[in-house]
Image 1 (cartoon, rainbow, N blue to C red):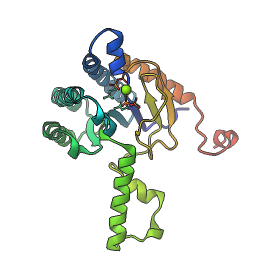
Image 2: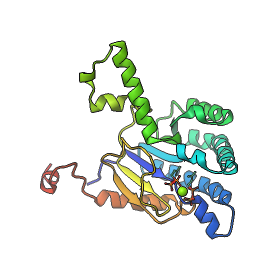
Image 3: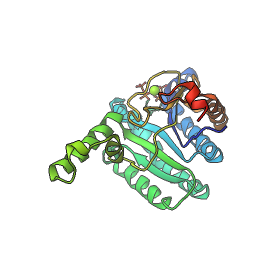
Length: 240
Ligand code: IPE
Ligand code: IPE
Ligand code: MG
């Protein structure tokens, strides 16, 4: 039986090490990583996955050397410009998550335009996590909720898990079913903390620039073999 797989989230890690292993600059790895994004977006569409979130830049990544940050922002702006036609052709809807107001103006403008231009598409929803921090998202949700309580439109007793979900950056996107991290490290690095609560985790030693849709298909196959119990017993789940 096919498992429900609505949302895949990927921590695209290992660009720098991949390049350094080849004796090249880290920037070479970031450029090559754009190819992987293209392949994986295609693959997710082909596999019929409704939502794909890609972790492209974390709030902590602002602490990298200025030169590397500038290159990543340039790559982002040019990738958006170059890829929008194929997103449109493939019926992909683009969305973002994170503190967009901290991105350089040129990136924010082209992202906003791409989001607008693809808003009517009905295929894969591609969410780019940019200047994203899971904790910051929860802090922002807490602020929104507190405002409503202060205004008197919500009482503290009425706050449920759903209230919190509805105050996240993208309240209509379902929780993550499968989280993949490339690059060999086994950590979450402040990614979708709330949305990952019951997600299946998959860590691969492959560096992001080497990752292609075929690797995604293999991981989806392995996900389909896992038993998600959500706190129940195996027997309960199998007789459902
Ligand atoms: C992921 O690759 C891309 C970003 C975090 C922007 P890294 O740049 O983290 O590559 P490694 O982990 O240093 O190899
Ligand atoms: C996580 O990768 C963030 C992105 C892939 C955008 P990092 O390379 O920043 O993570 P750490 O610092 O190794 O945890
Ligand atoms: Mg890294």
